[in-house]
Length: 154
Image (cartoon, rainbow, N blue to C red; front, side, top):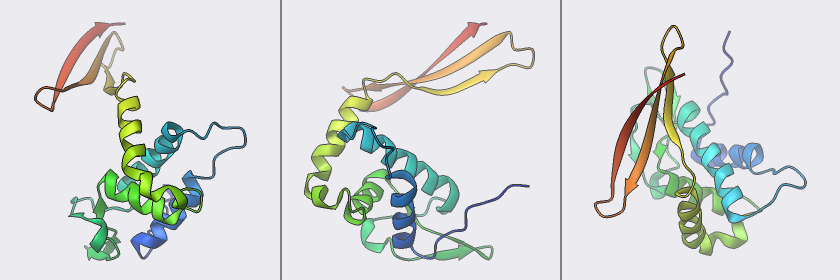
C-alpha cells in the first residue's frame, strides 16, 4: 500500500511545509549557498513529483496561489525551479533576509552544479550483463543539451 503525502490547499501552504521538511538542516551540516540550493532542488523535485499538475500547467510566481482540479483530484500548479526557489526564499525564515541575493546565489549554484558529473539514467538488461548510462553535456556555444549514450559491459 502506497501512502501519498496529502496535497496542501495552496502553493503557500506547500512552500511552508517544504521549508520545514527540506530546510531544517542537520546540526553540523555546512550551510553554504551550494548546499542550501541542493536542499531547494530536492524540495522542488518533491513538489513536482507529489503535488504539481502532472500535465505541467506552467505558471509564474504571480499566479502561484491558485489550485485547480483534474479528474476530481486537486493539483497545485507546476512551478519552474526559479519561481519555486524565489518562493522558498520569501517564505523560509532562514532564507528571507537573503531574498534580494537570490539571483546571485542561484547563479553560484548553477556554476557549481555544472562542475559535478551527473547521469540522467542507469539501466541494466534482464541478465545484468550490460549497463546503459545516459549522460548530459551542456554545450555553452549553442546552449543546447546533447545527450550521449554509453553502453558498457559490467
